[in-house]
Image (cartoon, rainbow, N blue to C red; front, side, top):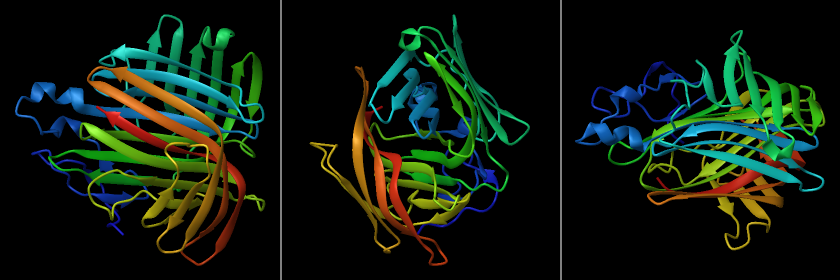
Length: 343
């Protein structure tokens, strides 16, 4: 397993090299992207920097997601809503050349993230140190318009899955995944969907990096409550970086991270709706994931392309903590995805 990062430092040195790579429980490294240095003509470097903030909220009946991103050549602002029982789904995306008007903060634990154009407004910000606020107003979304006011609580002691993945030629990916954020507020889309922290949990996916032009990843995640009231989160991944010991696989139990090593994904890329199998080599995780809905998101902008198959489904199996506690996972809703990109 890769080294755990435990001290504050800049992400990059003055020559654009990573000062550390591996995993952490908190975002100790400062994303000093101004020190990126991988092209002789540095004017073109910003076109290769990828940055995003993705929020997903799992309720007993729905999944709501809101994202602001800038992948250099293009900015993407999107939201989607899925109703579990019926499969009713709606997504809308704004594609913005060079990400103009999309404001993303330097680090995952500071600043505001927002985009405004005409009547459309998405604003993610931190209030009182521990509350992340999602403020969305998207007239015309789904015909009726979308509004949301959601508070996600991230207490100081809540651990997250933080990783620095190295690539060759000064490429890298710095990411923070936060599972099981108690959610309170509402989403209005034709009708009002209220959220309460006892049964609604949010997930944050924050990332910055410079990727190889052709990239690939796998991501599995869930944020749910166990029958005994504790929260359980899973963050599983593969395909990122050039060091196989650096993984972002982890169990998150009641806000504490239990790190895992390599997890193998077995699935059929010709039919993503078939069951997936996820197993860790150390025997601490064995899960079956049965999809019930497939979300496909494609972007094709000549030099930039992306294709995501995000499957929503139910996880069953078991996980084991560092102390040897075996936790049964029984039909908990989450997602798993395959992503290919040229960017």
